[in-house]
View: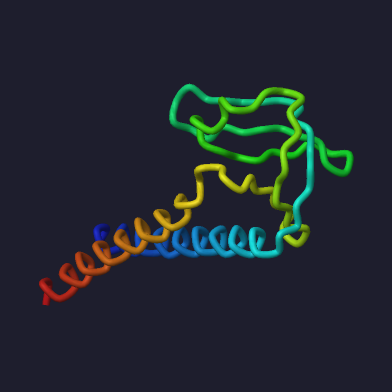
Length: 132
């Protein structure tokens, strides 16, 4: 097996993994919002990144600190001590802010990994069949 084909197989496996992860996160998000298990928590810390990375709100629930992620633009709307309503999924222990600005993140993860899978698969098939 050539090095290029081996690399292509690794990229195919990575794209399948990323697609599966994005699909799972998307389904947990939809399930959490559908269950409508709302809780009210008090924000104890805020991390608003200046770069385009994940910003987060820290809060305490059931005696432990937890984090809910949101976009940087949405992060500036909150202050320490504010009470917010979150959707809670007890099966996966996930907390989601309804309008966190991240609803399309998992969909784009599925689309991007699907495109990567198609491109790498076609190019690796061409490598295999053009060698013959």
